Image 1 (spheres, helix red, strand yellow):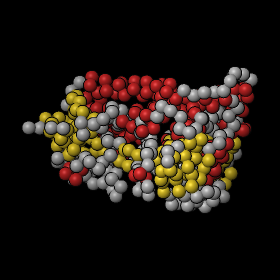
Image 2 (cartoon, one colour):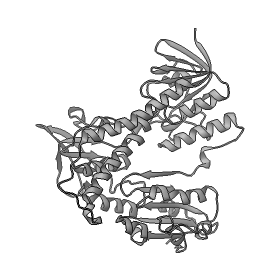
Image 3 (cartoon, one colour):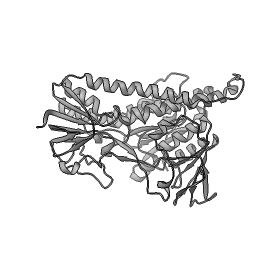
Length: 459
């Protein structure tokens, strides 16, 4: 006999818990299923723990630069990795515990711990318990992709998840993957004191960004002593005693890199391969991501997919926005759509990159008439005062509508400042909304009006 509910939510990442709360408040009887750690990737192996580590790395980096600010620190700067990890564990653990307490304390809600598998479009089995509901929401997230690389099965390696267990300083960390996760860990461990080599198979780092962004990020990382190897089309790994050797077919440089530890950071895959989706008739694409429409409904009536498993965005904020869209449609008579949102995200190296909307390359490809402007962070008084002048800001504007199409701010607080432009973009207001605003001095944001006053035709 199945336990009957009005809704079943599979997974407690960034979409599942708030949706559970809304459904509970609406008086619905809800079942929540979590197979492992409450809070999903963000709380346990993603945003919260990694940004906590980034903060420790920044403290070490700033301490080493103290003399530049007239501050004398006697002796070398030492990083206690066990204390770094303990701080990360405490902050991450507090968030995980809060999510679990929240879920277990909701009215009309039953929490099940175990792996959920569909038995039909309305039934899910968790351990030996069969659950049934007319509405089922999938929020199962993703995990690190482990590529079919020759020799990888013969050597120890780390992923973004297993890096959370590291409480020591790798002597030489080799990072395979020159995108967001790889770059954040690479800079972080370089600042902790490791030698770091980042290997990327394409011709540049973070290939989805414009070339000037990729080039500037590469310069920032190399200035801190990180070795970067590009165009590594063919890679293999092997053990050499207690060392790990990565064989390369790069356009230049040596054909091997030897290090003490290996981090694989080449992408993510959805946790959909063991859900029994075929029994529910839920369609996935060739990579296992669940296909959804503009309101996050799957092809199977009564089943939705939210978060990283639906390929509509691989960020905490996109997952949370998925929840908002589903709740608005189900409970508020507000027909919100995924296609209405403007993609925005950040790369949390130091200085960070804040991005919103289209890249310059995408605007060029669209063929529309556009205006653009760029300004180096060396022209930003706040950056000069802080002694952090790396990077630049740029924006692209539609020449006819005068609406901002996209922006990138690579520089101090760029991950925060980008929201000034994002909000104007969401409002579909002209860029003059920003140029006519009076911003506070001295801030990074005060340069946005100046930036947009210098627009020129995009060539």
